[in-house]
Length: 283
Ligand code: SF4
Image 1 (spheres, rainbow, N blue to C red):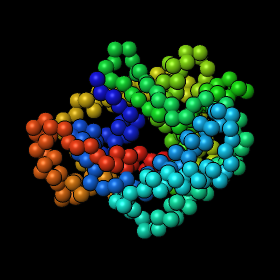
Image 2: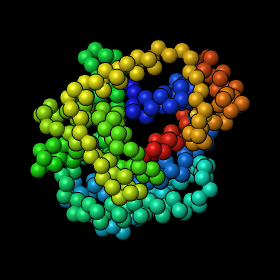
Image 3: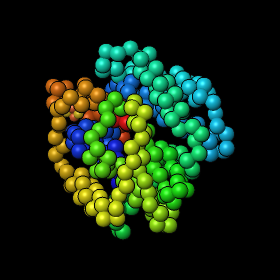
Image 4: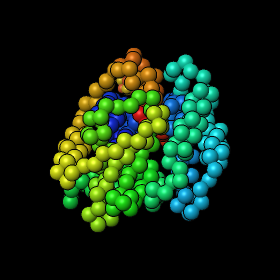
């Protein structure tokens, strides 16, 4: 059995060679996480901390949220952080502060029925299908008026996708399958994205037929991944944020011999110190 995640599926779709280096050969990343990933991670940390308090009936003040964000920034900052754009690190930090201020005032008094944060979800695509999908919901809420669950996802990206992206988004739709399976109460699930850079909330839903189609498409994709023998490179502008660019054959580079030797002899490569380099890149 292989455990897949939305990021793992997306990595295969974006560049099969990167997928192989990261998920099959488990080559440690030679660079630190990107500053965009760091910003996303710290904003997520602050909101997770905040809503955990809200669930307990306490509403922290805005300056406490900013303090938590600032602490995360300091604790998780690394010297080898990847900064592609020539923008000072401080600007990224300030952006996060602005996201949290805007979010706080927009959502006060935070009475939208939060149930859990960073909720682990297992998605079964089909009975007896050997592979599973795991995911983490940023925030799960229960909307009393609509008698529906809400899956909330925070995005710190600079760009706001087209409307069709939300109608076809795989990640939250897969999570909604996991939520429906878990609660088994036939309540609808609303998918909600918070685009913090735009202080905007976007919602979407899926019909049963759409979810069935998504399951079929995802099974097809996983079967394709399992059967793939040749992992082609896919040179694009995204290579600038790829942790393996300095090991990539498409750029005239190669994977260090010690790692190649480990792969040949079946020895596991050492764990990467920056596994989340691209986790929040598009978030
Ligand atoms: S640098 Fe580009 S082509 Fe090479 S592995 Fe990364 S994404 Fe793929």
